Image (cartoon, rainbow, N blue to C red; front, side, top):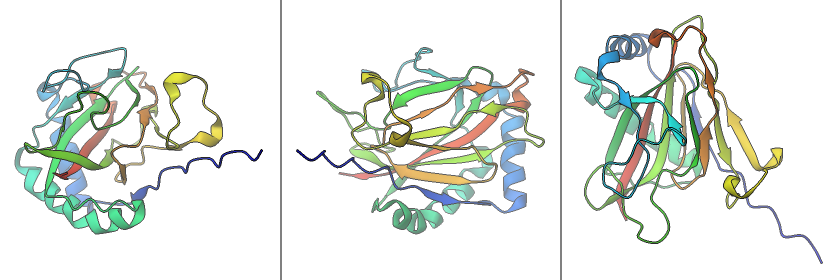
Length: 217
C-alpha cells in the first residue's frame, strides 16, 4: 500500500525592506514612546474580546497607531496583490485589522490559527460579519538586535502539534528580520517561538505589527 502524500507546507509571501527608511523609523519611534499603551496580549476565547492566557501567549499588544494608522493601512493594502500572488490566497479584502505586539524575555505564542474554528465557530474580522483571510507580520527592532529567538513557525496543512511530536519536515521557521513583511493564509497553524531578551528593557524587545486582511465570507 502506498503512503498517503504529505499535505503541503504553506505558501508564504515575503517582502524585504517593506517600509522606506523614514517610515520605518517613525513607526519604531512611535512604538518605543508608547510603552504605557501596551497591555497583556489576549487570545481567541469564548467571548468577543478574547482572554489573557499566559500558558498560550505571552506578549504585550496595543492597537493605538496614532498618526501612522492611515499610512500603514495604505502601505499594507498596496502590498496585497503581491502577497496574494505569493500565497495563492485571493483575499479580496475589504478591511484591515492591525495590532502592535511587543515580545520580551520569555514571550511566546503556542500553535494556533488566526480564525475561530470548530463547533460554535464565529467570525472575528475587523468589521461585523467579516472574517480574517490573510495574516501578515511586519517586524521591526532596534540595532544592534538585543534579543534572540522569536521565529515564526508555520506548520504543514493538517499537522496538529498538540497531538504529539512534529517532524522537521512538517514546518518552516521564519526569522523576525527587521523591516520585513511576511504573509500567510489565516487558517495556517503557526506559533511564535520563545524570545530571549536578557536586558528586559522594553526598547530591546522584538516588535511586530500583526495584521489581518478581512472580508465578508
